[in-house]
Each structure stands twice: as structure tokens, then as C-alpha cells.
Length: 82
Image (cartoon, rainbow, N blue to C red; front, side, top):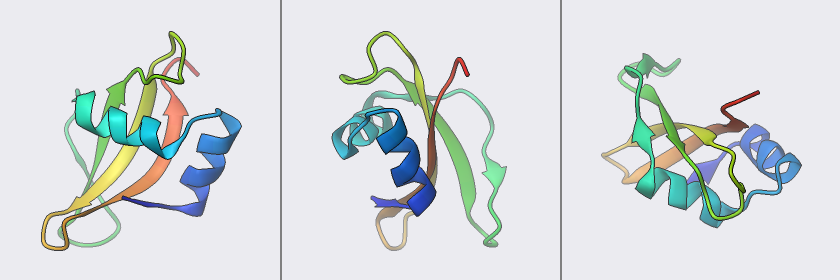
């Protein structure tokens, strides 16, 4: 998992941890079609779930997977209801 500076700032503002993001990526759902990323051949996915530290709020993680490198770039983390 490779978080951007923006994602780290968003996580800090929301008092969420790396474990929360990993939990959302593992347990969450992708409800929308992927959007093309700025990098050709890559797509952004919105993964949605609650996490252990989000209380009763649902969190959206915008992630760009790279299957070749076996990595996931975390673009941002946000509350769904905001």
C-alpha cells in the first residue's frame, strides 16, 4: 500500500490508521465503475466500507491497483456522507 501525502493528511484529519485503510480494501465493496487514471492503463476504484475506527460512518478509499508490481496506490480517504 502506497498512500499519497493527501491520503495521509485525510487519514490524520479523520483519525484513521493504515489498518483501517487495509480493512476497507479487504472488506469493502466497489459499487461504481472504475474511472481511468491519469496514468494510461490504470484505473481508480472507489472502495466503500466501515472500519474499526470510523464509528458508524462509512469511509471511501480511492485506490489505484498495480497488479504487475503487486501494489495499491491510495489516492484519498474520505467520509461517504460528507
